Every structure is written in C-alpha cells, then in structure tokens.
View (spheres, rainbow, N blue to C red):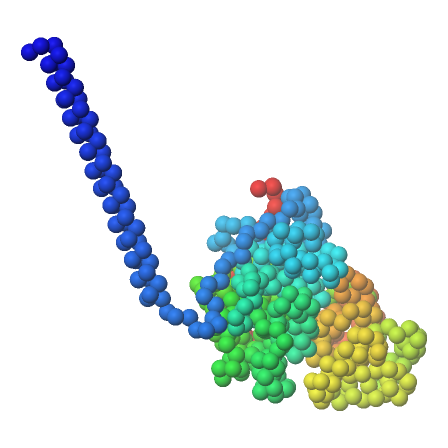
Length: 531
C-alpha cells in the first residue's frame, strides 16, 4: 500500500471517530434535555394538582397567613442601655428555656425610622411625640420582633402606644392594600368601659388617618346598635377594643368573628383577673388564632401576681417580661401624699370646703379629682360642691354611658375643673394634668388607694393627693403607713392610735387561700457587650 493510501485511510478513520463522538455527544445532549423537560413537566403537574386540591377561599377572605414581623435591633450601645435601665429601675427577663436575647431599648423616636411603615412613622411625627416613655422604649423592639411579652408598669406610663404602634405595624404588613372585606386582626381587652373607650380613641388618632378603623365594644348599650355601627363604620374595622363580657357575648352568639385575630393584647390584666374575668378571658383567647397559626400575645399589668403568671404561662410562648419599677404595687413617688386624720366623718365636708378655698379652686381652674366610695355619696358631694358655686361633674354607676363620657370630656377640657368619681374611674383613665386627687372617703383596699392617687403625677409630672382618714378606716392603717413610708411621705402622728397589723392579701375570686400558681423560671437580661 502506498503512502498516499495510508494517509487516506488514516483520515477516514479520524473522520469516522469525530462523527461518532459528535453523534454520541448529540445523543447525550438530547437525553439531558428530555430529562429536564420530563422533570419540569412533572413539577408543573404536581403544582397544578396541589393548587386544585386547595380549598376555595371565601369572597373577601385573606389568603395569606400572618407572617412574623421583620427582626429589629436597637441602635443603643451596651453602655448607654445599661445606664438607661439602671437609672430607671428597668429589668428585662427571658424565659429560662430561651437562648435568645431581646433587642435593646429604643431611646428615641428616630430609632423607629426604618423599623415601621413610613406613613405610620410620619403620622407619629405629626402627633408631636418628643421621646418614648420607659415602657415604650422597652416594648417596641420586643413586640416589633414578633415576640410575646408581659409589660409590668404603673398606670399612666404610655402603655397604649407601647402595644399600639407594633399592632398597627402588624396590621399594615398583613393588609398593605386595605382592599377587600376587613377582618378583625387586632383585639385589645380592657377591664372597664372608660378604659376601653380611651384606648380606642388613642389608637384611632394614629390608625384612622392611615385608613384602618378602630372600634370599641362595651356593655351598657344595645348590642344590636353597636353591631350596626361597626358594620356601617366609615373605615374597614381591623382593630377592636372591648371589655371581656361584651366581647365574649358577641363572639358566642356569632356576631363577632375572632377567628382572624392574630395580635392580642390584655390591658390591666391584674385588674381583670381580680374582678373575676379570668373565665371570660380564657374563653376569648380560645376563639382567636392559636400560637401555631401565628398569634402574637402581649399582656400589661401594674403588678405580677400568681393569677397573672398563670395566665401568661398558659397562653403565651416564651414571653419576654419587661418591668418598669417594681412588680409589687407601690405609690408613685412623684405624688406628694397628705393624710389628714379626722375625729368625725362629719368633718369631711367642712375640711373639703376649707381646702378648696385655700388653693383658690374657683379661680385657678386646676383639675381636681375627688373620690367617693359609693355612688349616693358621690352624688351628695357633687351637689354640695355645686351649691358652693363650683363647676363640677360626676362619674358613677347611676349615670348613662353617654352622660359619663360627656362628663369625663368636660373634665378633661377643664370646662368643669372638679370631678367627683367612684372607683369606676380609679384605674386606667388617662386624664392629663390632674393637679390634685382628694380621697373624700378611703377606698376598700390599699390597692385602690394607690390607683386613685395615681390619677395625678402622670407622664413624669408631679402631683398632690389629700386623703381624709377616720376611725372607720382603721383597718387600713398599717397598709397605709407602709405605703407612705415606702414613698418617703410623712406619716401623721395621729395614725399612732390605730392598729398597724397588715391583713393577709386576698383574691376577690379565690378568697384567702387561693392556689399559688407556679411563677415560672426566668433569667434577667443584661447588656454587657455590643453583640
């Protein structure tokens, strides 16, 4: 075979080899493409089947599940945070089984800038808030992170916005378009009509300009009328504030759907439990979404008694506990307390007149809140003051809800600078700039006394309290002396004639021997570094 023939044969073999490799490569590529196509077809078929098996949502229902709000962190340094907490007697505690640390407190409103919706922040700026209160500073980072929380703080500490701002942010994130039928997403439970109305009004100031309706439900008025008003409300109702009895009543009869509630607040939980509302509260919570379905729960209380601990352990998931001050009920140190021991109860009227003249109450228009024990006594004192020429109104059980609200508004505006009230107004009401609290009649419990005088000295301001104490009140002498000493207030020498033994604490629902619920272990949080 010649050299040319050999060369030709080699070229033919090389050509055949290249063709074979090319053909093999093409077959491989074809096979891979087919595999990918089959895989894609299989996936699309599965997604189609899954979608077909999904339940068809009701018209106007929300299709997305509540999502956990985005994590937040505070910009405060470890040093500034530690100083802030120590100087204001603040403790933050986590559940023993939790390995997480809560974010540091927010020390200014500016720290909310990139943590909440821009329009919500703009609305807050328009309200002219200068700086967060102590409870707001500590609660906002925790609640905006989607954690359950217990806030222990005195009344008048700014709790409404402490839970209200995170609640509004939650609503905004869940329904940014505000389209379709409104579902109640946020439920706030309060112990009294007055507090519920006040909370509703404070939330509405911020929420309703943004297009989110806030409605209040309470007893003493027609259920049918309330439901009609809520149905015809000018804005879609996303937030409901209500008292336990009325909320549960409407929910049980099917008029109020709580099945979409995924942000729950219990305000003044200690008072609600003490008034015997625990079964109602437990029933209401059972009608809302579960933790597994995304419910966020927060609770606020002036104290941390066993009954409140038990409720927290049952319905909250690893809650953060924020305590501003002490979790034991104590008097506001900014309130100057004066106790006058009177030999005869009939001296009260004359002494009241003398005091009001001494401060020139008719000329100064300073707000003076006068507490009586019973409604008939309140009416008598109110009529007496009016006869003396004072502009005065009252709040007690014999008044209609309309009249109670009207009288309260007149007092707030100083149209009637004197207000005579029974203990229905002693808790929760945020009445700005009350200069004096007068205890015309001593209350039934020392806790009520502390709450009464807490109507003044709010928002960091100072206040004054005058209390008439008689032989009829001697059973409370020991407790009153303790409260005065704890607050570094003078104890009248006349108190020496009364017994100073302190009665054993009782619970209005369970009596003297109610079971102490296990408080649960917690660990105190410190901020030692900048991690």
